[in-house]
Length: 130
Image (cartoon, rainbow, N blue to C red; front, top):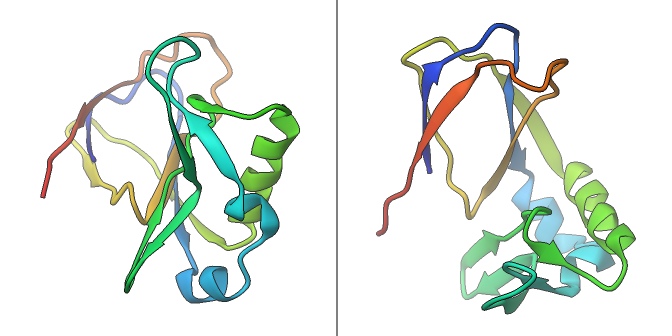
């Protein structure tokens, strides 16, 4: 995914990127990351997947608490804590016109906290296929 900053907003609101220590994560995978979750809208087409997917020599990551579903929300929180334990966090402070490229299969990203409901920050998201 490519994020483009159209407007940085009235207050600092960084984007955090977690790059994962993959060798350690694959060697010592915590139980919450092996569990299968349902992904998708509450009503509509859903699919099932574990958070970590290993295919041959390639490892992929799928984690989005906004579209993941579990019988108990604490399972999603446990998975997030487990991922954070294997992550190196980088803060991106936006300026108008900045771009950020994130490999959605290898890293995680999320918006930092804001104090007001509308900080005025506006990012445009672009996707591309192989």
